[in-house]
Length: 295
Image (tube, rainbow, N blue to C red):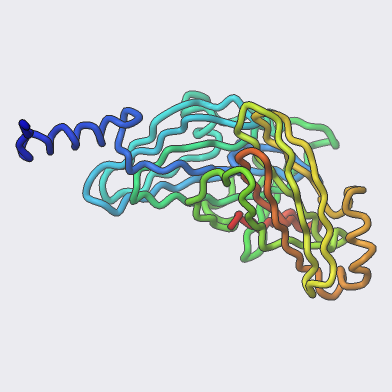
């Protein structure tokens, strides 16, 4: 029986590893769920996001945007040199840096980017929320924006100006899609819609429809309600003001005055396809936002 010398096998095996998928097999798939340019939402909330890709290694790392949900974004590669941080706005991520800033807030775009990220890259995002006041009550240029951070707020007069980078909550992204039937949680919900609105984004990346089960439990653990919802194939679904939706009226009735005393709640989700979800709690007063990533 003939054998192949180890010295000849090693290069073959190494090449096989490096050629899987056309790049290093050490890349991992993650979801960036909150990619926005200047998306105009409820209460004239104007949303934008900033992404930072930090490479602390001594070799270049790559972020590959391989798919989008909710928006037709650019497929692109972002190279991060050794020891550097690459800063990319949501607008640049969607358009691949080939289009200038939006000329007015109704040119809004938002969605989720699916990325392959080389191992060792730190991926972070910050959401900046503005309150847009259009001149004369209509949408147009020249309106005022109130930019709020966790330290307070200030006003600027030009719709094209931006808040200080990184003024919103910072999220670390290291999670891909959850496999079918695997239960995961959104641990931070706010079940008091008179004070803050709770939004929920759910993603189905697969080429077939999905049924998602959502179970929400009150802070004291006394009340749990489970609802099922259908998602179309390859869909990005945002549920605004979750606890004012008719499907959750029974839950709100059951917790009663607890919504004013202990409004915290948590959710568990599972689906019959791959799925991803993220929660946002937004202040009615000034549109500041907190983010609850899945676990």
